[in-house]
Length: 289
Image 1 (tube, rainbow, N blue to C red):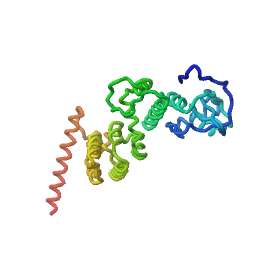
Image 2: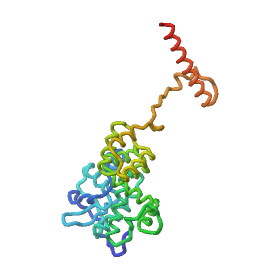
Image 3: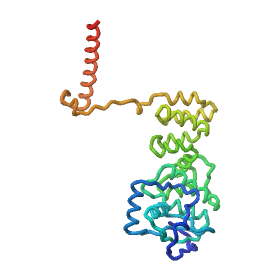
């Protein structure tokens, strides 16, 4: 975490967990998963090895870095935690919070999206040039480019992630779950709130998610004012190659019937065998009449 030289670290001290509150609007989710279970167990055995970073408020302390540790400490039964107190205003704390978490191994697209937006908004209020109204095409150096460089993303990618903050909660959850890919999600972020609600309903009904070409089409129709509920339903009803039903048969159950050879030869054999058997069934039906 980079801090200006004039920012002073006070001595590490123990504070009550009751005095801590999360950073308002922080983008990172605190999940009760296997990693959290491991962290809780580690804290029970060894305590908190890395102090939380906090800033003082009128009612206690606001967490800058250490939301997961604070949650784990509560679950582990701790009453106090070690902290380093930082004298920062909210915008400075927002930048520090984002920077301290962007390099985490597991970070959801929604977390990265709101993290980039939080930091860019904070830098904008500090008077930094952010070019928030510019297009996604990179034509000049700006804060977004510099910000993305610290996390391995281009300026364009930073803006595309920020676009995800325009998705409704249902669609954004599907992005986090990996059901909607990142690039189609960016295109869908240009749909109106009503259009997104209709799309979310159609996804639930069809149990399918938009491909990139479908997302691009919906974005274009939305921009032209032509994207109706009927059109969304029609587009989502289209069959996509990667969502066609497939049949899997264990090789152990049919292996003894298959010829030796490469995959292509086996595939042709199965197709011909199915065609032969279909003709056989057809003849049996004719003979039974």
